[in-house]
Structure formats: C-alpha cells, structure tokens
Image (cartoon, rainbow, N blue to C red):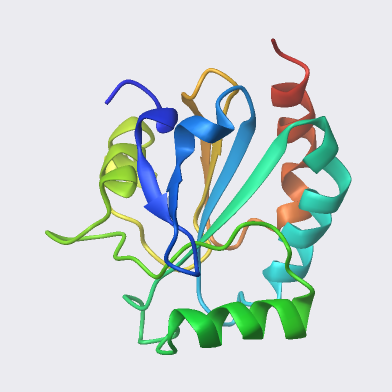
Length: 162
C-alpha cells in the first residue's frame, strides 16, 4: 500500500470506513484502551478533534485488547464508555489487533513506515499515536506517554501543508 488512504476499517458500529473518504485530511491514528493508565488521554484527543477538526484533522481511535487485556468490552460498550466518560465524538473504530499475525493491515503498514525505538516493528502499548500527513504518509510516531496536547505543534505544521 502506498498511503494510509489505501486502507479500509470498520467503525465502532461495524460499518465500513474506507480511509480514502478522508483523503487530504491529516490523520491522528491511535490504538486505545478503556482501562489503561493512559485512558484519560481520550480527553486530550477529543480536544484535538474539537480544536483542529474543522481545519482538516481526523482523529481515529482503534480499540485494542492486546495489552494486559485493558479493553475487554464489546465495541458497543467501548463506544458508550468513550462517549459518556470523555465526550468522544471523533471516529472510533471496531476493536482490532495491532501486533502479530492478526494485526490489522493498517497497523502492519504504520509500524513498517514508522518503526519504534530501536527500529521495532511492533506497537509497545496502548495510546501509541501515528500522525499522517495530507498526502497519506506517516509523519511521526509518538510514544504512549506523549500527551495529545504535546502534538499540537506537529498537527499545526501538518495542517499548514497542501
């Protein structure tokens, strides 16, 4: 695949979402979990969505239960939790695997395009973030500890490009 826009996903309600529908937008792709120490980052992700959505940022949350079983609920339960607890109204996707043989193709591509520390091709924990430019290419990978508000400068720079 040549860009993030070449992939498809299912939204949290199970409806297909071809990422081609988001072509030309800046994407912030995050593997999420509802019972993680980083779960409060949902509030920061929602703030980024509120602040930059109209300018072309699409935040996409991909629930994943691969890290200490921290997102065991159904897609409906996860969606309700995110909306009720953090007011999330950015697109949440259906639960996926981000590592291993069953990893979603988008995540296999993301880790190949933006390896982690020491070149690792795996996602190490919940709330790893990938910033994708308007051209569909990965601009940067961020560690789980990186707070969403700390991405504002990179997001603004990405939004400023044509």
